[in-house]
Length: 293
Ligand SMILES: C[S@@+](CC[C@H](N)C(=O)[O-])C[C@H]1O[C@@H](n2cnc3c(N)ncnc32)[C@H](O)[C@@H]1O
Image (cartoon, rainbow, N blue to C red):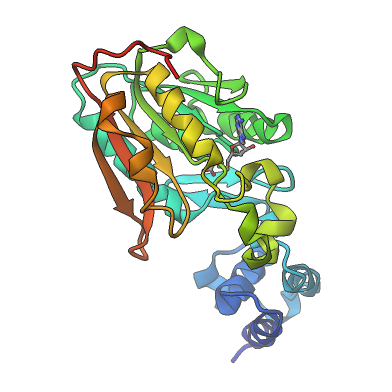
């Protein structure tokens, strides 16, 4: 074993003792970050090049600071996003929902689909859709100015800024000018039950911003509101996708009832086969009035 890999093995043990869920991967990722190489190239780092900064990073991770806050970036689909304090770190679970949205948009017979991402955080969802659906126009809504600043940073770096508009607004009332015109509405809203606060890992509880997490005792507060938002914004025949937490899959389809013009309401699973998001469509012929609560 070379010197660096030996250090990585020691760091792995330290992270495991601190309760980090993926200690080996994180120890390698930090070593790669510190030495400016990819994980698969760590064997090329010469002993003399070992940087003691590595152990500072390991100490921060052992104190349960998120890996992505230490490296300053998070990977999401084909993007490398800048993240740090003040913005929610995008998660792999959300990539699957975005994949569903991209497939749905590509299958729509609409030349320049109009998309709304509610609670954009780092901009992960909005920028991925703009990147992978070339003629889409995306509105990215966020109420937290600090988070929106990260989204704008990522948007500027992405090269898709001409088709993504960032809005500082409350997702419950945003974009009245798009009423009844949106082809696809997508949201990863806050959905963690305040009742579960004690169960949440320290990386999340102490580092993701509070507005990104909590949504009432059962976690469903914002998703209930999103039903009305979808009814107001999505055009007849348009689609909607909403992420939710473990164990909420059973409750959410009932929040989008046929009587209110929702159809094809389905639970979708993440890679771990847990219900993770719900998808639905506005009926083509729903006769209710837009915007009615
Ligand atoms: C779970 S995070 C999702 C961030 C990003 N879309 C992602 O998937 O990585 C939820 C986001 O919604 C934002 N948010 C919470 N309440 C909001 C509201 N009323 N209006 C707009 N954004 C809100 C939070 O600030 C946070 O950035």
